[in-house]
Image (cartoon, rainbow, N blue to C red; front, side, top):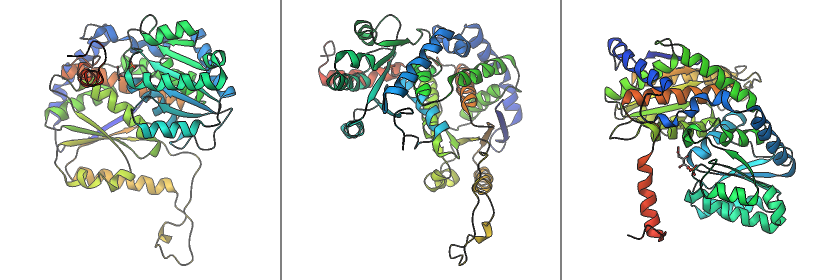
Length: 435
Ligand code: PA5
């Protein structure tokens, strides 16, 4: 289990206040498990770790193997919940630079359709030059503008490069089982297709083919991911008290919010963490930010961001709290060597490992921020591997559901996202949006 340590929050809130929240958190968790809360049509994610049929998992593995065999590059097209989870897992487990030096047998993975940037598109075109590639297109609705534009162009490129039949063999669609433009295109062109269950919302879909197929293409053991999530489902649902780290995290978030903290910063000391932070940010931001409520979720990567956000965290407005994730150090160590001249003054660290320095940076940061009046929740996550990835996904999804119900909002809708789309469609002259 992830160990949630709240010993560094007491400067701002009190134990009786926390204990007073136990009933609300308990009710929120019960509403989630019994399906009696608002938005209960979208609770399919709760059972995903054990829901995917074995044949379907085998089909995902086979599709991934085919892509690994016949492609230098796999382009994953999708936005929001349709790409953040897989990218989070790939970068946290394999590093943000994993594409360097990859090719057939272990393809590079690029993400497209998550912006409308011409620069980003031109860069992708350049990266695809002379490469064999396949496309995984992911859209639950099948109509989202950004991925639809990118996919139209990539499909055309595949057809031009390989001809229609081979292009169709290189397209993998993940979408709604019955409706939407992508579903229809997939049927008509006989693309290998996978389903996003109707009762699973986009940002809760990482443990469906949405997350599993790109992870498998990256060479991540998806059985281990699902096993980690299954163990989390069991462990975090069965414990109904503040001994449950999910309860503790959900309660502290609500307590912080009620005591005037407006911003939560989720942090790790791993550079590969940025996209996991982005996944978490969408999960909590889109689930809780409604009805005039919600913590503003921000992510940071230390120590890099100590040199950008560190000043603000230390001495800026006291409306923030931090959640720091820690992972066990890897087995392979890096030791700092000595230098005859010692002009950089680092000889005092000779023989020390980089992990040791990182640990002191963590402890020093924790103490400084707590002294500066910022409550810090720490999460000891243990070893970082595929199984842990599954646990982390499930832990945060369950925490999000419990936290949002405690806040009193529906975690499973996103009505606000439609406003920008409506304006954009009107400006673009999309039929039906003229006035
Ligand atoms: O969580 C959500 O529902 C959203 O973030 C969606 O994932 C995102 O808008 C993409 O939608 P779609 O998969 O329908 O293209």
